[in-house]
Image (cartoon, rainbow, N blue to C red):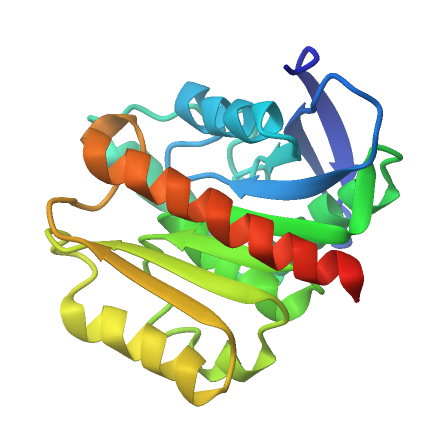
Length: 239
């Protein structure tokens, strides 16, 4: 069970403000927290539904608007990629880390969150953001669904990972080719960090969200994500 959703305003270290969608479990006991990082189409209904799903499974979930500097309130059309890309190209790693830090600090200060049990999950550009956040913040775990640009752009940060890392990829994804998937996994393994690396043979890029939803892969990924988080958060809670 969940309570009603709300939107909160976060102050970001670069002087900007960022809206974020929040959903929480209905009881008042401390829960793990999770940052849900959007894909290129914004904190839209499918993205909010993912946050709701995490809240229904015991997480305080926050989904920050990563396009707040160029298009606050952006809700993209899956059939109009041209309208999306200027906002994607305007993102910077420094800005994303500032955004992730603002969301992390909100979770950490919330009385309903266990501050030792904060994780991140993201999709496409949000999958990259989840990985980036895991190198900048003391997360218990991070899950990256088809994170474009992790390889080669973030491989030098693999040794900086704090929490366990889970990669989900689609074998039919023409944007993230096998060599890029392998390079990302190799970088984490070579850095001696905890990694789970999963490729779904029937899945394309975006298989867990509305525009290219592949139900079998999405359902299996969810079950794996829950098991992964359960173990990672339990270990973090004992540290």
